[in-house]
Each structure stands twice: as C-alpha cells, then as structure tokens.
Image 1: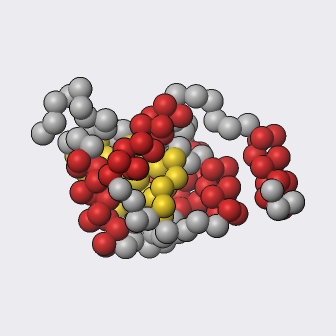
Image 2: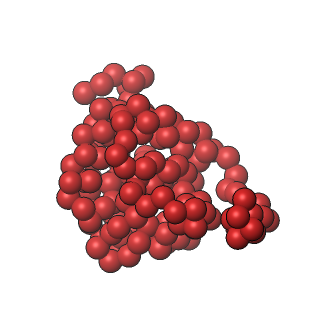
Length: 152
C-alpha cells in the first residue's frame, strides 16, 4: 500500500465489458495507489454499486455489457450525489462526435487506449481538479457541436 500522500484515489470503480481492458485498467489504477478496486461489466451494475458505495474515481470504457459509455455517464450525472464524481473515459473510440457526446454527458477526462501509466495519471489528476469546477455550460457545448459540424 502506498502512503496516503501518494494515493490519488482510495476507491476506484472500473467499468468495461472487455476483460483485457479491465485487467489493464486495474493494474494502472493500482499503480496510482488505489486501495479498493471494483470492476463491473454492465452499466446498471455499476450505477447500483455507486449508489451504495463511496467511490473516488470511475474509469469507464465506451463498451459496457448493457449500454455505452455515454448512456452510463448520463445516468451517473442524473444522480445529484454523483454529479461531481470524477469519471475518466478510457477507450479505443476516438471520433470527434463521440468525444463531444462524452464531454456533454459529463466526462471528467478522456484517455485513448493503449495508454501509458503516466498518461492515465495525468488525466486522473486533471479529472480530480475538473470535478471541483462547475460543469460545462450548455451554450459552450452547443458552440462546440456547431464547430464540429462546420468542420473546425
């Protein structure tokens, strides 16, 4: 176990239906000093777990057994107790539209697979800071969507 000063998150939830991704994410968050790591393959299972357990960070893939990452994030953000919970999307999906949808749904960070431990650490640290700020306003999201549609 790492000293509390080195520990970024005590309790981490990993959400993915891809076993190899779950194993890789578990190793990476363990290296960040996570004390407790729970893995869920389905979004509904993860939401139930979050409603009953205090979690410091969620690492979510775009592929879950029963829904995609956007739907999962939407469900999490609808719960007022969880709206500030850092959720970092770690995925193979890199289309502009998907990234914007995930950000609009309330994602705190976005990491492309394969990733280095340093990359994940940088993004979870940022997510921890972002979770302290107000959520992105709808006007800014609409402008971003317009820019993507315009090809910018």
